[in-house]
Image (cartoon, rainbow, N blue to C red):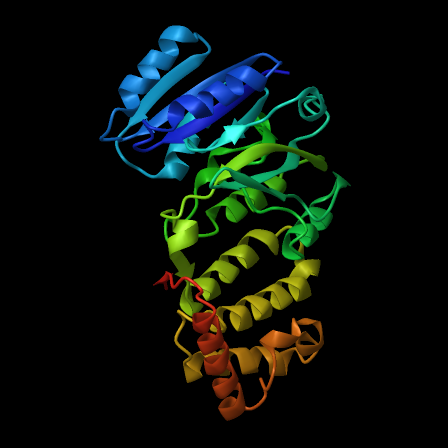
Length: 320
């Protein structure tokens, strides 16, 4: 099966060649590489032209800076492979026949694992569920239970399973946009599979949004609203699972040392708990210690924050 590797770039001149080389060295099926320059101000275009000179399977498209999601959309629209694989411009792929053998045309999505790479060391990551999924309720259940990786990378998507609407994600959601993309694609999938094999090497960039930013309470409320808007029209029976997901997100967010403890947030949590008393028994214990008493819970949260700081936890900027 033909594969289109889509690489959105912004000032990626230093890393792009190694990313492309990893595909060239390890991909044994027909492929194309589509590089989308998202308004770079460094030598990304020059580096890409040198790559194209040596490999006619590589194509370049350029746009003014619109963000990674718009760059992925442009690359997808220009792709010709049956499957697409989205690759960040500072990451690498390690492909083999065991991985590529899953591109049989049977599945709309193949979700795999990979490695986090930092300081020349690699740590495995993978999906909590391994196997086939053939209905949207099961797919969304696995997502809500955290058993499927939320990433857009580490996966192959059948091109025709993706629509333009899948890329239409509210720009407010700078964290979690990959998860929203996956939810949209899954709504129209016939069958997909989560595999044990790994192929993606994710570079742990300390300056990325993942490492420098964290969501606040208002943000996570809006994000859960968006998830409900996407999932409930297809699967109203998942209302309770969405409620549990929201409750855990709310209580977990208040445990971030960057997030200020406010009584209005506490009151939202308590209202949700009173309307769904079963939540407390299904949430992580550390999230709900003293939760039914504002004073005790407030002290607990602040002590939890202090402990995190004493352990040297890096403080991130809050997006709220």
